Image (tube, rainbow, N blue to C red; front, top):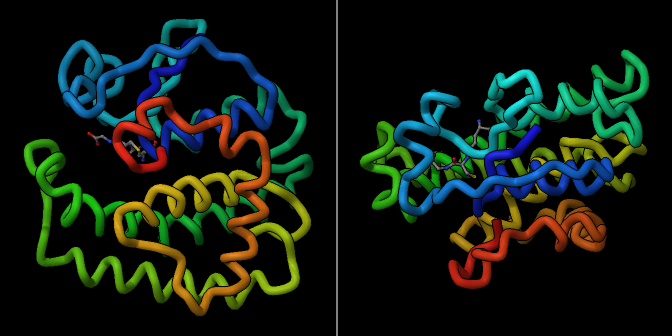
Length: 216
Ligand SMILES: N[C@@H](CCC(=O)N[C@@H](CS)C(=O)NCC(=O)O)C(=O)O
């Protein structure tokens, strides 16, 4: 097995997941800033053109971070980052969907259509006129989430899960490109510090982060 790796919040989330699990996977760097991920041979393996991806021992390559996490958790159930029981897994997937559909996807598209426009305009359809609305929507949904997590340590009650990894890696990146946690979202700010103190958080930063002055 090997991981196609790069700078960026999604590959970082994969590295953080692997660190939390204690799984050692050889990494092969793909040069994201030079769009190596957007042309063959990479797109022959992963037509989605995104990073990260996982090449399995049977030769198959799987894109999409959460799909790979589902696979890895089945192969390495402990410590559970999705869940040990059907009930826990359903709960985690519920929070994962809430985090991604409400917040992180809007944050990422807000970035791609504004600060990231020069990088993305030759890669994907871009809608600069939507950027401000997407950013505003994401902020409102973070405030909504903030209201739901009062009195608990993690996004899913009582357990550190993939929902925490997804949101943390996104917000650590987005803060550096003008989309910080809303000032009023005190629960989320405290939660962010809790995640940040885990060794996997700092350990998962890509060496290019310092040069690019963005955390990914
Ligand atoms: N839905 C994908 C998104 C992955 C993604 O957006 N990766 C970024 C890096 S953080 C990327 O590949 N960006 C470069 C590009 O899109 O060309 C996943 O969850 O894995």
